[in-house]
Every structure is written in structure tokens, then in C-alpha cells.
Length: 225
Length: 225
DNA sequence: TATTTCAGTGTACAAGTGTTGACTGATTCG
DNA sequence: CGAATCAGTCAACACTTGTACACTGAAATA
Image (tube, rainbow over all chains, first blue to last red; front, side):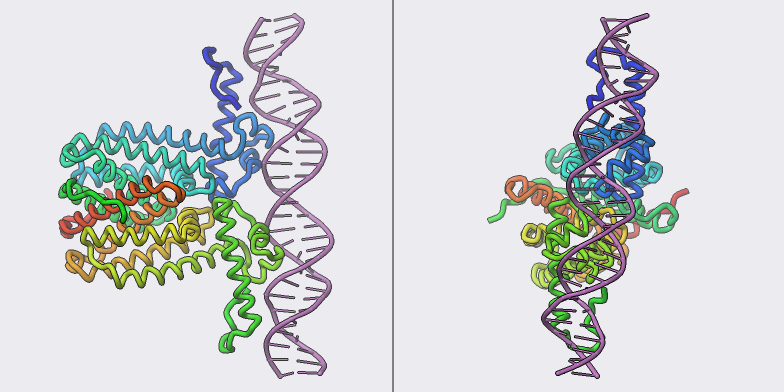
């Protein structure tokens, strides 16, 4: 159950091997979930089978499928965070070409890591509440990162933080939407793929265009009644 | 299996009763799916049990759970279409107050029909491909309806159809996103509820603001390479 | 080296699953 | 009315599932 190497000792050979089959289980789950459609529709035994391990060995790593799902979200998002972080340093700005090249880069990454993104897209609204919350948390994290990037430049630097967050949220969800469309398309349709991507690029341009005209003081939304 | 009343005859008493238990099955599925998290995680037998009917009776109405899911999408969306259609005739326009009151009306409707929207939100990215496609079709329908509404007024009347569709798509997905957030929140959190709604209202304002400044001719997105 | 730890195995079981086929009895129809 | 239809029942099946428990043997520890 406990996966950390004990507080201070160096990771022993056993620890390494355990970590290794843990990763095998995670990969197996990702693959089985892809074929089966979602975490909710697959069984502990299927995952163990795919991982080439006896069902009961599963319990050495996770209490149940929910815990596996949580670990999977962490695992997938950790890799994703690294990629995003390094991509952030390069292409900056909200010009049309910057948007376009950012989106293109992202689309490529999504297609290269289709299994991972398919998992996140599904489980974002999946059956398990805890997994859903974990995905939501990660999305909020990305949104926050984007918001802090945006704040570095006009017109966002002079905007209330709340409004920047609201725009970052809109951008992130537009990209997530693109991601979902892309993945549902399957790999062999370059024309539709470009249409969908082009549409998303336009949507982002529209959003940034709106942002450049945004008047915060007019933005208050009174509570009902 | 075949549910239509035969081509020309009036619906007989038997037909009516069949239709009735069919509806009971649909309602049961909606309820069980709500508790269980999604279609993929529930069983035919659970649905039958909830409907107060023997498992094998299920087959008199649907070949399998996928077919049930499809019927459920149709059923739920039919009711939704009617509501939207009549709401369309009243609040028109894209002014701040129009947006606000439209969103408020919609939020109320979502909360009143939480089970139905929860189902659609989940199954939109659920395990079953056919159900997913059915939901996508419905969303495209709503997007199309909105686009044709928008075209009636400036600045959309002078825009290429493609661009209007792209904006309608953005609006619909922003609303869907609001819906998902709202439903995940649960019913007892009026403060967060208002925050989320207010954010969505702002996002829509931003979108319409962008639309008012949109220059179609600058919008072309070239293919890669 | 002798002892302990523990990741992975093997067996077993009760509970739930989808689907089959034969049935029953009210409703439909000639 | 009498025969045919057919929505819903009942019993049975071959499987899969999650999990408990005792185990093995290599690696870790003392």
C-alpha cells in the first residue's frame, strides 16, 4: 500500500521493482481503459491480467480502482506539467501567430499522447467522484499557470485578477474542448483535424480580441433577486 | 424490440402499457446512472430492479444497454429541445442584461432537471461510443439553432456562416462547461453557485465583445506545413 | 549467516452478471 | 367467441467479479 521509500533509506532493489510493477499496472490500466471506454467499465482483474500479474497482487499497490485512478491522474499530469512548463518558456504572447503555433504544438502533443489525454477527458466527467475532483484540481492548476503567464503582458496586467482568471479558464476550456473533439475523431482524418483545429484557433483569437476590449468595471454581475 | 405502433393502426392498450414500462425503464436508468456515476458502471439488472421489472423484460424494449443509452439521449434531448425552443422566442439579443437573464433562466432549468443534465454531461465523454456520438449530435443541433438565431442580428448578420458557427460553438461549450461545474457542485452551495454563474456570464460577455470586433478577413487559418 | 520482510502466487468462495428458453395470462383481432 | 399475439415472469446457465487467506522465495536486515 505504502509506496514511499521509507523516510530516509535509499530506495532498495525491492523498492525499485515494486515501483516498476506499479508503473506496469498504471500503464495497463490506461490501455484497458482506452479499449473499454472508461475506468468505470473495467475491472481490477482486467488490469491485473493486462499487466501480467495475478489479481491479488493489485492490492500490494492500490486499495481499489479508485486509488489506481487517482494515481493515474497524478502520473499523467506530472508528465503533462513538465511538457507545458518547458513550452511556456518558448512561445509567448497572444498574437495571432503565437496562438496558432501554440495550438499546433499542443495538438501534436495531444495526438502523440492520445491515451493519456483520452483518459483525462473521459474521467473528467467519469463515474468516480474522487477521480473527477483530482482532474478538476489539475485543470485548475493549469488555468492558474496560464493566468499568471497572461498577467505578464497587456491587456491583462491592468486587469483585476479575477477577470484574468476568468479568461484563463475560458481559454483552458476551449483547448480542452478541442482536445476532446480531436480524440473522438480518431487518427486518420487530417482534413477534419485541421478544420477542428482552425476553429479552435479562431475561438482563441476571438477570446483575446474580446480581452483587449474588456472593461472590468462593467463586468460586475449582481446576485439574483 | 420494435416500439413504433404498427404503421397505421391506432395505439392499442397494449402499446400504451408497453410504452409506459419503457418510460419506467428509462427513468430507472437515469436514476441508477445518477447514483452509480455513469451508464458504464451500471448493469441491466440494476435498471430492471429499479424499474420493478424482471431482468428479462428489459429485452422486450432494448437489445442492450447501449440501445437504452441511445433512447435515453433522445428522450432527454427531446424535452430539452422543447424548452429551449420556447425560451428562444422570449429573451433575444446579446446585451449584458439579456445574457444575464438567459443564463439565469438556463441555470434554473439545469438545477430543476439535474438528473437529465448530469446524464448528458457524463455520457458526452462516456464509455459508449454510440451514446457519445448521439450526445455530440444533439450538441451540434443546439449549436446550429443558436447560430441561426445569432444570424438575425448584428454583428453576426454580416459575418461568414462559418464564423457564426464557430462563435455559436464557443458559446454552447461555455454554457456546457458551466452546466458541468454547477452539477458537480451539488445543490447546497448558493455562494459558489453564484460565483460560477457570474464567471460564465462574464465569459459570454467577453465572447460577444470579441464578436463585435471580429474581422472575418483576418481570421483565415492556413493548413500546417 | 540466520532471521525477517514482503511482492507476488495460488486457491477458494460468495455474489453478481448477461442471456437462454419455456411459461402464463391478459389483450387483440379475425 | 376462439385463436393468436406478446409484455412480462420464472428458473437456470456459464461466467466474471472483488476479496480473503495461506503460501513461497528472493531480497533486506541484523
